[in-house]
Length: 304
Image (tube, rainbow, N blue to C red; front, side, top):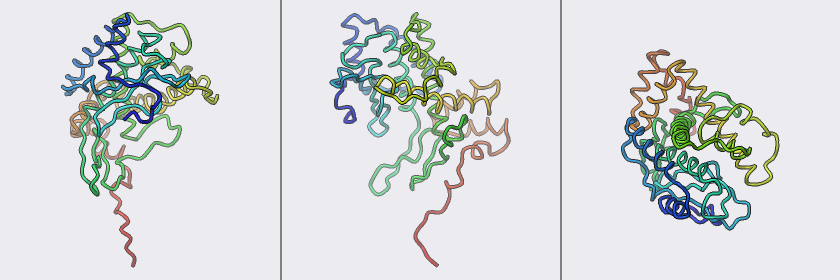
C-alpha cells in the first residue's frame, strides 16, 4: 500500500500521534475533533469509524524537499485493503510536524474524509475471478466497467458526475468538522502564505483569489506542486459540489447534503430520489446523472 512512497516511513496514526505527543505537541485538537466526527457521523448512520491503526501516516522522508499533507500524490483510502495512506502536513524530513496545529487539522480532515469512504456502501462481484466493485455509495458500475454517470467536461464549473458529488459531500463534511475544531481549540490562520492557504483549505474557507492566484505558473518543487493540486481539487471537486447543491437545493443545501451522505452510507437511493423528485419532477436522479451509455448493449463481436 505504501510502495509508491519508498522514501517515507509509515506508522499507524495512533503511533505517530503518540510520538508527537511524546515530543511535546498538544494533540488534544485531533482527539477533540475525533469525538466530534464520531457524534456527527452517528447521526448520519455511520456507527463504526475507520480504526486509527488502519491509517498509515508517513513522515521521516529520505527525499530532499519532500512535502506532505492531504494533497500529497498517491495517497488516500484503499477500498479493497480498507486502509488509508496519508502523510504529515508540511516538510517530511522529520518525524514531527513543523507546525503542529496545522498538521493536526490536516490529519483530522483526511481522517474524517476517509472515514466516510470507509463507511460508504459497497458491493463487489467476481468477474473473471477478480473482485469488481459494482456499487460505491450511490454510484454504480456495470461489470463491464461502464460507470453510471459520465465525467464532467474539462473546466466545468458544475457537475453531473456522481463520483464528484460523493467526493465533494465527503470533503464538505470533513472540512466542516475541521473548521469547528479549529475554532474550538483556538488554532488560528498562520501569517505565512503557504500556511494561510493550507489552513483555509482544511477549514473550507478558501477565497476565489486563493484558488486562481498563480495558476499559470508551472510547479517547480514539491511545495508548488502541492499548492497546485490543492487549487485543482478545490475547483474540480468542492466548488462543483457547492454549485450542485445551489442548483438542486436553493436555500435547502444542508438538507440535501445530509440526505446525500446518509444515502452514501446506506447505499439506498430511495430517500434522495424522492426528495429530488418532489422538487424537480419525476426521474430527477436518473435524468441528472445517468449516462446513455450505461445500459448500452455490450459489443459481443457478432456480424450479420
